[in-house]
Length: 350
Image (tube, rainbow, N blue to C red; front, side):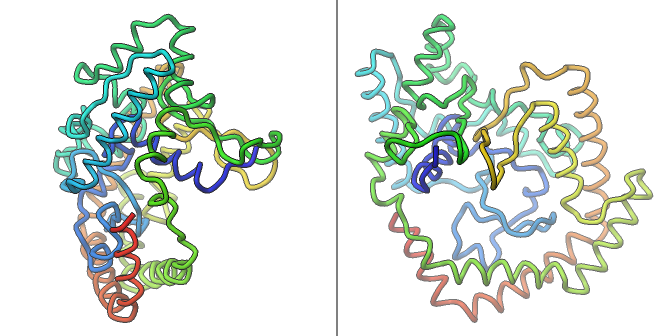
């Protein structure tokens, strides 16, 4: 079936809701981030990373970014509406305060200094099983679900997150060519209904009017990446990584992407495809069925790579990138202030 833009937006919301609003796999390099000139306008989830890869929108476990009281109030309403819907469906569900969800079981890890995080978790890709993020004693719904029979658990998951939900909170989105859609939107269960009920039209921001701004931001990223100071710093980083036994890396995102690709191969994750029928899992994959020996080997490789990466970036890349980035962003803000203020105001009123 074809999945509408609204449904895809809800998938992102539900993926966060399934494991807490601040728990997404973002590696330790992002811990070096602070609020850059552009981030002042793009919102708290906007990360300008000196670790390469440029601009990202992310929710960070244990990070300094905290939701506003207004956002917390909406999240409470979503939980209450979800509980009411689940009760109607014949299941028990306890509305969990967002303040409790914010206390990620991985918060302590992400509060570590970047070098210590790298030593223990690498990038946090294969070393942290994000599908277990919500499985702690503080979440009563984990206990409720675990007490059910396998058949009842499937029914519970379907009621909570829709028929495409998996046991670990991920949602499978069918690609084009898998048959017609009768409603035009994916069934995302009680959580999806609750999000629509609480946020309503607020979630349907027309981002098309900001297309020009987004294209200009992409162009800004290219200008930063191709600045000679960044190019020289990247070359020095590449040489440093080669000296550390990791040759062949050309871009600072290569190590992270290398580990992610290997993990995808182990978990059987399917990347999105523009053509033909596909199945894309939105949400953290489970490591339960992954070959333990291969996973252990990958984790060791990830930590070794991340430690070397951290040390090589600290030798000059981070400082050079940040200097260029902040200079370019300040100029960009001066030239696009009206558009950025409009975007900021639109997001604040969602």
